[in-house]
Amino acid sequence: MRSPNLIASFTYALQGFFFALRRERNLRIHIALAVLTSLLGAVCNLTRIEWVALVATVTLVLMAELFNTAVEATVNLYTGSYHPVARTAKNVAAAAVLVAAAGAVVIGYLIFFPHLFAIELPLDSWVRRLPAHVTSLALVVVTLLVFWWKAGRRPFRLQGGMPSWHTAVAAALGTAILLTSRPGGAVPILAVLLVLLVAESRLEAGIHTLPEVLTGALLGFLVTLLLFQLTAAAA
Image (cartoon, rainbow, N blue to C red):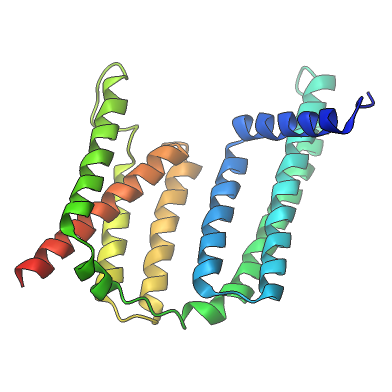
């Protein structure tokens, strides 16, 4: 059906995007990774050419995920029951996403690897300058939000759901490694990768959602940061 005007075309496109965003967990994960990658690019002070390559790669991955969603919806429209050809169509569409994601990993490695070892973040001095009460307030706010979230769920349980405690522990250990390791080396990079690996495993297994994983990571980071601040103040 032909769109009546340009505004209607944009409206239909946004409706399709938000439909895929609500339905596809992988699309939400890819968008979160795109945001984190952009932040890392800002920290690494990428060149214009590197930014062009990064934006093009992210766009390609998101487009592949959207096409995959469109193929699945079309196949479901014409096939109400299991059919081997329908399965093949969905598998090929998923393979397109896999190829795009694999290419993105390679391009990301080529872009960021030379920059990562050159990053020197004065974390120790930053921790000393940041007031401990700021971290304490942030920790209290996040904790209260977690308990408020759990209080609205029946039955109330400390285990499972919000937040992801595995990710919280991983983030706490990763933060401790970042604050005690030598800046510019390989250890901080490996620590961050391990935290991301734990978070991704919780998402991939379907045990936790993205907000639960992010909240757990934030709790682990804040608790460890506060402990280091209190230790530095007592020294």
